[in-house]
Length: 439
Image 1 (cartoon, rainbow, N blue to C red):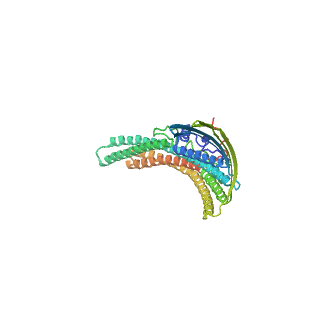
Image 2 (tube, helix red, strand yellow):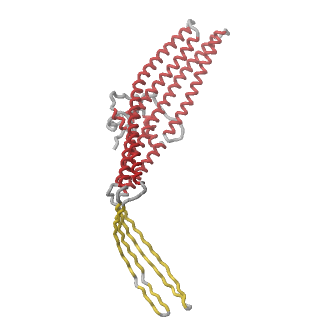
Image 3 (cartoon, rainbow, N blue to C red):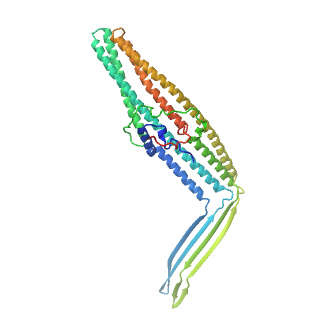
């Protein structure tokens, strides 16, 4: 049985936000794609039960009851002949799985069931990562909106300042018009961000399996996801990925199908047994004064039989079936190897993304600090009359861009952690069930 990973229960190891944890729980309970994947597992489980049942003997019971009458008219007299008949049968049959045909089918169905379960885990893993990423994006939109709103307040102050200095000269008018344009640009950005937040809420609601609506959120983007990533993660962790396990189980199912196809070349043995019982009630018939009586008869019988059949000529169909099954097994092997290579590449890419995202965030935070300091210096120089308003405009644009870039860097770092979580099949803990929720 595959060990539980962070995609199943211990979200607290990755998620440190109770609101996000509730959203993940809701998505795992209500998401439609996950529900469909669960039904596919149910279907595969039923097919396995059918394959295992085919290896067992069959027992059937049947019965019949017939009642009727015949009326004969002779020389003006009408005579009725009633009849009745009861019968019951009990039949048993069994095809001994001498050459493993049904056994191979059962192994194939079992492997297919395991593949379906891994595919279900894959849907759950992707769902958890998608909910987390969408939640972080929503938080980021809120924080970007806060940054823009602060910029709006500052630019509203520039409007007041340039308006007071507006004395009809071209230079003063230019400063005021530029301040107005700067303010309107920030207001347009705020409108775009509010629309983006509404779209993100609707998309996240769909992941949760419910109608679009407001989504609660707390904290800053990425804070609850920036868990420490240990160094030297073993490459074997990618074998926990659902897609790798599903491909391995598909390969096992294809191998079992080859065995089933080969078994069709060998003889088939069938054993049957049948027990029969019938009863015909007695009748009394009177014709022209003569009475004739038929006694009640009961009949029982049984038989057993054994039969064997061996294909001699099937037009090459059975050998073709074997070759086709072997080809499917080779295809499954190639697909498994490709899946493992893709998983290794994905894991290495996400490890690199996580490492560089931390460096990028540090640089973006420093840039935001320096841009804010440059803006304050430009404002002081403009207030003292030693520099034109154009310097303030440039510094304000640079500061807003840097502040927004810092938020984006936080989101990229959070997305890198989410991507690594997904690339390693649900986290990097060797035993994700060992720890409980934080106290």
